[in-house]
Image (cartoon, rainbow, N blue to C red; front, side, top):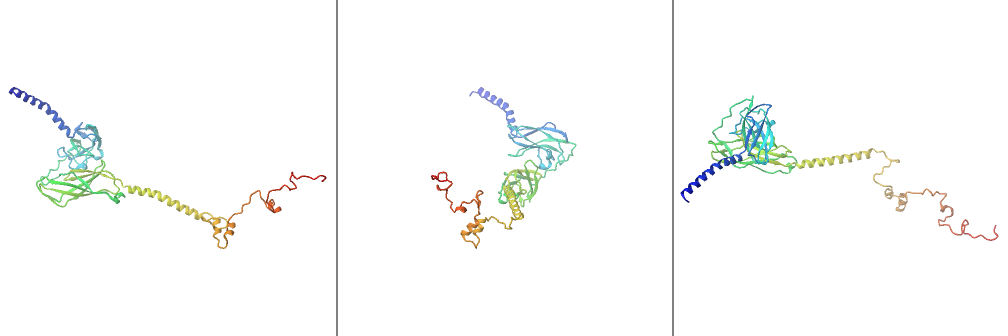
Length: 363
């Protein structure tokens, strides 16, 4: 290639780089979730419009006003420092965008405040925007310590499974397993973590868990902390891990329904009515009046009773057991056997027969 051709190629390459640089910066920015507010300040009772871009498509997000937080440090106190009762949920579109109105409410802790947006399910993502709640107290943020600091190095997981007792409503229990590393300059001894469990979009309930041991600077350790829910709990839960006022990790937990409890109540609804019916029938059988003669026959017919009498022969018992039935048109006077002793049909020599020949000369 000639020198002039090399110069032209270098100039063309530089021009293309300048033209593509803004596009590359825009694409990189789009990969990171962002939040924008219609107003940077508002009083209690008003509302603002929160919009965002760069989120995962069709993702469920939670929007909250949180105190004691800045975008550079996030929300160290977790959702306990947010106005959870006035939060709003929104679902992004297919391009990862959203827009939602949010009522302004005072968080439970002083400002500086932010509008905190975070994913509810799926891969964890969050973003903050500075917001000032008019009339709310403002206090400086607590200073960050330069000592030992723990950071989660691996994804958290829940070990364990439910048993037969859990199927019948016993409290579900798991073990939260994760690996942390000390990224500070001093050792961390017997760290105290906070493990929170949240059902759906509600705020987590925190419980302190202490790990016995020492993590030296630059070292890591594998930790296991027990997690337990209330009896009969079921549905979508989220287990959160917090240390030093900052949420380190979140792990979803889908708890199955205790079908044994449902089966128990179905059996109760079937067995109790049947037992009451049997008791009622027994009471009715006891209190109903006796038949004439004072003998009550319980499932024993008269022929069977006669056959079981000890003084009767089988033939006599059979005759005694067979009730005498008389047809209504037969009476003792009209019985043909009583008159002539014959039960045969009439013959031709009957005097009343119209076919009997008469003799000549007879009167």
